[in-house]
Image (cartoon, rainbow, N blue to C red; front, top):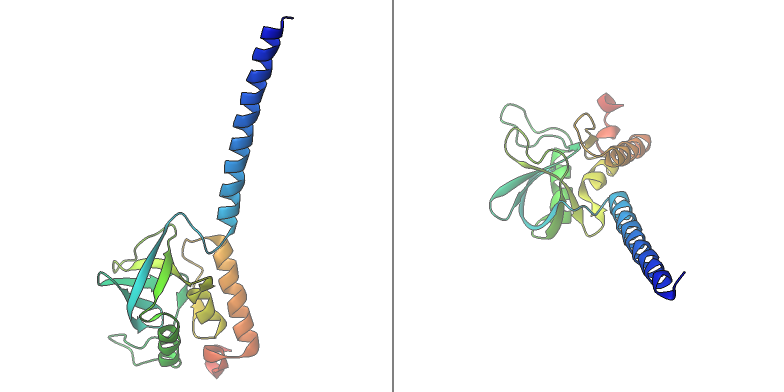
Length: 175
């Protein structure tokens, strides 16, 4: 075998090796990104102008955001009186996000029937959705289609709040 054909073969193997290495690196980066609950290729950083209630925000551009996977007690329902812990949920949300920049992370469905944006809301690395449930100020609503890892986190947070008997779980009717 000539030295020239050995050179071509070695060069060919180097290129194949380089391509495989790059493909493996891209695959690992995508796996890491999928495992990180706070990161998604589908997100938007926005300023919260006002908190409407515990699970609904008004953001720049006069858009409304409905927190995905949680339900706080009603405070502004047209046919219902304010529910217990509704005011506390609203105040909790105000303290965390009002007039601050947050990250909206989107999932399968982008809008609800009322054309509100559906999103998980993050303040730095903290999930507002999860914090509300953990504080006993929201229930986990996992019947809707969204990421199973977040469903598990919300259900775990709800279990903790129930066990501690805090917020809505301190009410006799919730036990």
